[in-house]
Image (spheres, rainbow, N blue to C red):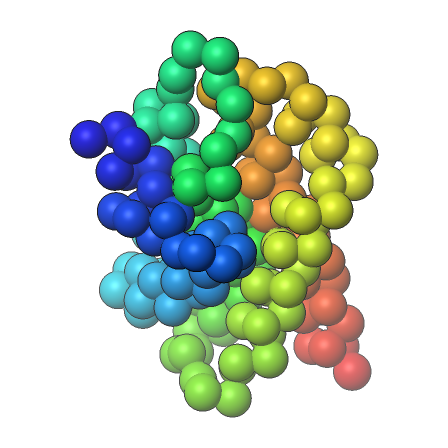
Amino acid sequence: MKKLIATLFGAGWFPWMPGTFASALAVPLAVTVHVIGGFPILVAATIGLFLVGWWSVAQPGANDPAEFVIDELAGQFIAIWPYSAWLWMREIGVSANHWPILICALLLFRFFDIVKPWPISAIDERHDSLSIMLDDIAAGIAAAAILAAALLILEVT
């Protein structure tokens, strides 16, 4: 059961770039969670994903196999937080016109998750069950910070 959850019910076995595949799946899922309950529910769902993910990837020797992609789901959710908060604070709905924002969130998260600049690389080098989740959380936070800044700049102009 733990491996099934860690692989997002098999999505992690996608033959090409399973992390990117899982991140791409996370975008419409996060938007759906937002539509159901707004920004607070997306945050709660992300915390739940982190906790379930940490439990599911816990293993002796704690490496980060490519098929474990629940961490990408949680990190991508965080990358979408600024968009969700922006909608929620303005009391506006999701729009098809917002797709560039969501693509930016996806690309920023994948950049930080793949390149792993410091401190993300330092977290990744710990090689324990917590670091499997935390490096993607850190990548999500970095992506969210840039997306939030972009949304603020666009709001002002």
